[in-house]
Amino acid sequence: MIHTGRTIRLAAAIAVLVTSLHAQSATARGGAASIDVPTLKEWLTYIASDELQGRQVYTEGLGLAASYIAGHLERWGVRPAGEDSSYFQTVRVLGVRNDSRSSVTIEVNGQRRTFKDGEGILLPRNAGGRQTVRGDDVYFAGYGLRTSDPAVDDYAGVDVGGKVVVWLGPEGPEGAGAEVNRLLSARSRSAVDRGAIAAIGPPPPGRAGMTTAAAGARSGGRGGAASVDFTTAQRYDRPIPPVATAEDDFFEFLFSGSGLTYADLKARAERREPLPRQPLTGVTLTFQIDPEYTVVTTRLSRNVVGIVEGGDPQLKPSYVSFGAHYDHLGYRQTVPEGGGGGGGNFGCPGQTRPTPRPGDIVNNGADDDGSGTVALMGIARAFALGPRPRRSLLFIWHTGEESGLQGSRYNADHPVVPNEATIAHLNMDMIGRNRCDDPAQVDTVYLVGSDRISTELHNASEVVNAGMAKPLTLDYEMNDPADPQSIYTRSDHYSYAAKGIPVIFYTTGLHRDYHYLTDEIEKIEFDKMVRVARLIFLIGERLANLEQPPARDNRGPRAGRGTRGPLAP
Image 1 (tube, rainbow, N blue to C red):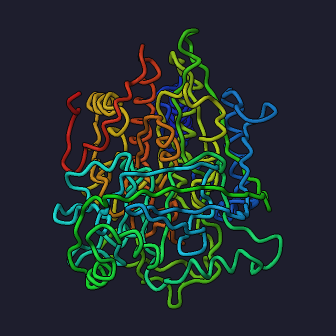
Image 2 (image 1 turned 180 degrees about the horizontal axis):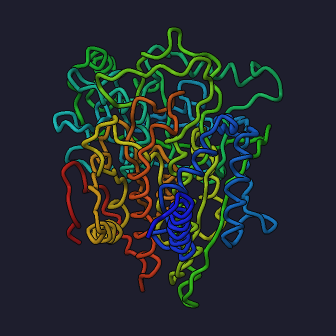
């Protein structure tokens, strides 16, 4: 048979149509196979475009992104979970003034002194709700540091649960390593995370006398009634463990009955010499937290929220939650002189920033977190169009992650579904590249938090990945509590973990385009992003079909660098 050119073109067109119909049929069926490269690429082309202006919070560009996501959810039949039957949860970010009446009283061997907030001691402006915290068990933890180096661990062999922790030192001990630079500013939070009921340290380097200056600023030096002491998307009226910074006068009295001389300890800390660690006997600290909060400003943003209801009448009141953040950094007003080449905290030693396109001032955030945004869209569509699992599913695109986890913190305190009904939260942020653009990382995804609250969750994740046709390499390096990037506390999953909800955070790691103008769609590894998204879908599907939710044993981080496979129960 002789084929004319027209016949060949017609046959080719029919073949393309058949292939397209097969692809559309697979998509219409939903399930993991419906998460594919062409669809995610189409969505990300818009989400990471200049038209969305870098998706900074409170901007038109972020609003366009929210409407784009919501429009797709409506098309797929995902049920709205926001106010007034919409896909939007209003996030209120409050600017608050605190006219503090708080104080800390020290009793040392029967002698007592009270230090008012701003007079020798300084409490955070966001000090939580009114309460009295009394600590009879006070522990001096040296530098208050725990690093990946066992030689620099002020908590070794010590349980500080129920204690007040005190620490000193502007820099940490000699030879502590580069990771200390991050850990120094988190020492009070680290003590509280370990169960301390309160923590006290000195002011940051070069800021001695700050409590006196702060007191003056609060008593008329504010600059008018509109001044704001802190902004928050969380409830600020709940009691939290007190943390404080104190001046020399406070510490001199605190150590006066301990057998330790504060002047000597301070000098040794400034020389970065070893410090002792010991209980301060005969000492009682009483924190009288007495704030007077006034809301001065309110700014509004929106989470995008949708629900796919479960198919089991008994289990559908419980939820598996999936999250990503859809905001980014917006415009950069100035381009580095001479293009790129600058440094930056992007975790890739020896690499420098690339050169942006001439005149480019839009931080498009293709990977951060455009990749997570469109992957979550694909997961939502896969569940909406495919077989429904037994439990219900919540999908939430968080606003304001780049501004302090605003959207997730707001939803954790004002949840669209009850926290107690949420059996797990799966969060994705930057899942579209190889760490430091290393081709050897093509199969690697980093998991954080999977073991901390629920060992069963961690093990279920491992089993699902092992059952995939092409398993990924699950790397737990960033799950180490001494990880210098502190990934566990830096994305939206942490807001839910703080409420006791088991979490898994997925990322493929940082690269030299992180938080930079050159985070563009052309650099996305779409095949890898699809594999990660399908893994998250399958893990969520397994959790949503379990008869019982993963048990919360709260054993803390055990998976780390080199960990493979399930953990022992």
